[in-house]
Each structure stands twice: as structure tokens, then as C-alpha cells.
Length: 134
Image (cartoon, rainbow, N blue to C red; front, side, top):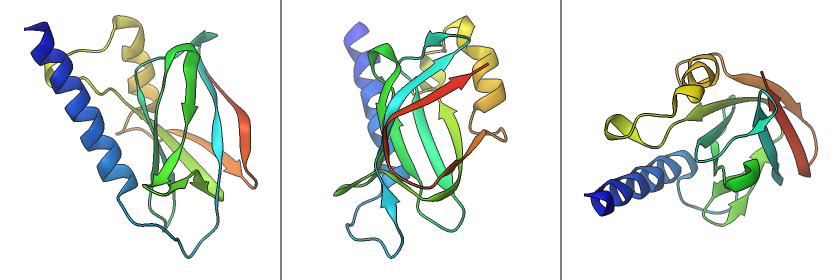
């Protein structure tokens, strides 16, 4: 049973990232590297999916690893996020079968897929980017 739950979790994460980042290579717009750490109320997030949206461009995505570390991917061959006003939203990869921890429920309500998200300006690449959510 545990194996099936993990398989479902990884399948869902893969699907979310595939839809978010698509395939293909070169883009007609500027994409810059974006990686760093994300925290919520001072604690590192873990196990969530970040989606980065810039109006008129394909979204980028990132899976948050232990310690809150993330690295954005735009396409299969391009890492990063398009420059501009970025709206970041957070998805819980567990779906209906795997509810988020209770501490993440307010986070997903405020920054989840159906929210206004967290907005920031991205003008250049950054490999030490910090996102501190409250």
C-alpha cells in the first residue's frame, strides 16, 4: 500500500512538472537561471511543487527538495524562468489521496494554485534566490 502511494505521488509530480515545463528547447524570450531556498514562517519548505508564471510565456516549475532547495526548469533543455513580473504559486503533489501536513494548509490557501500567489520581479539570473513566505 505504501509503495502504491509513493508511486502515485511521483507520477503526479512528474505529470505536474511535464505540463508546467512542456518540452522543446529554444525560447523566443529571455530565460534566466533561478534556484535557491524557499521558507514559510522561517522554516524550510519541502515536498511542494513551485510553478512560476510570467504573462504570455510558458510557465516554469520546480520540486522543492530537503532544506527548501529548488531549481526552476523551463523546458526539458532549459533551466530557469523568463525575466519579468513572476507570479509563483505552490502545488501539493499528493493529490486527493495524500493530504498536505496541517501546517501547509494555510500556506496553500494563501499561495496555492487558486490564489494570487507570490509576486516578484526577475531581471537577472540568481542561484542564491530566497523566497521567505509568511
